[in-house]
Image 1 (cartoon, helix red, strand yellow):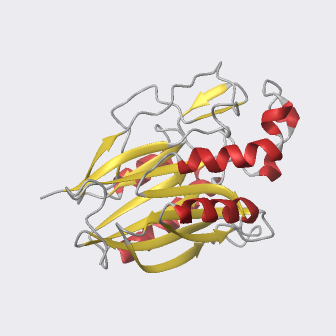
Image 2: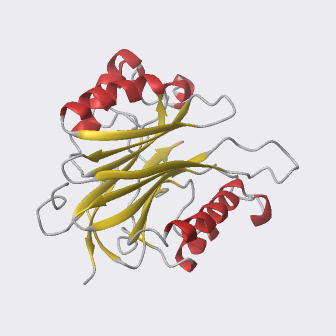
Length: 273
């Protein structure tokens, strides 16, 4: 049987982090970043070390290629983590990976949701949600790890793939919630907190961990800082937001200190009485 997570009080920590797939690293997109930092020979070991140093009980990663997953599985496996991985469909090079401390959680079930988001007009995007049901401290929790599609800011709501994907995910979560005591949705949602997608998550009864901290950014792409990475949690849980590295429009990402163009978003969760 797994021990009570984290500090023995029933709390556990979760991180979500888009690690930036090597396939998407093009120097023209990151003109302020040195070529050394973008070189996979430097960046991948730095990234593996960065993830290992997070130390959270559950770590949800996006844009993970199989080569990076293999390195992470070896490193984090040596630290006592189990893992699940699913690659995006449609020939995409990357996917989602979820790591969990084996002495805190036991894997009960795992499956994948493939978003049916083409609506017959176009091919489906290939994006997925990786679902792990973990048991620890007397409770079962559903951990949903996903990466939603980015939509142009002026796209009408009925044409937004990311919103379609979240709508499908919320419907699936309603089934998962019958089998678990709580749910955490982690991932890169590619939208800001004022979006219709985050409103949809809220209407389904979920809060996000850093909602009370305005000005927190998790990504800097094209010299524009934004919060687009989230940890959303159901009403059975309460969250304590953990500090996010301070970034703004001027922050250079990736960098020697941060090997992705995102930074991790982390929180500690506790079951309500």
